[in-house]
Length: 200
Image 1 (cartoon, rainbow, N blue to C red):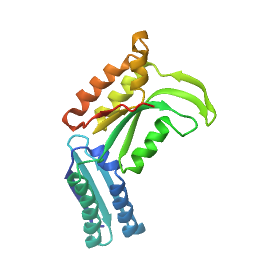
Image 2: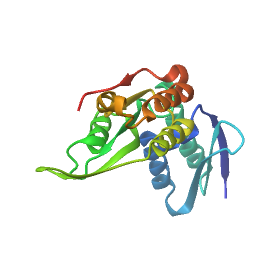
Image 3: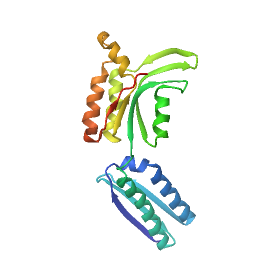
Image 4: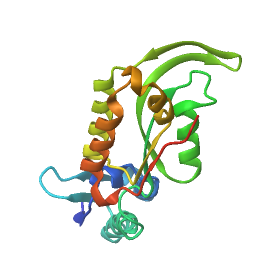
């Protein structure tokens, strides 16, 4: 059975493999090959590469589907690499879904960007009000941020609770803000375009 393996160099293999356009290209290739072939797309464990392998009865079709997937990955590189518009959202969870991290994820997704998160608090709330809050340990908030930035990265970060922390700082509440900002600066470097702190 004819088989073809090609490699494509990428800046962020995880982001590229998570991209919608790449998933669509893989699904289309699988549909074209049907039950007479298979596709394997994975990142290299040792190099900044994605390996694209296909096999099937028709060597021309195998070459075509591999090239389609490679082109989808290269298209991401031309558009800014990996996931264009990666946003790190630092916010509390709203169990009612109308505010907090849930609303931010909806907004980021609607703008065509990818939202990663660090949860600062869990709430029990609905349209009538907030009925309970459990704060997340500051060290765990910082760990969420550092882990996301070490792999996915971000082009900007949004911190919904910065205003509240500024009001509470004199009491020593939630001291993770400075650590979180240092983590964003260390991990994202020149790729970061800003830190947004809306008042909520």
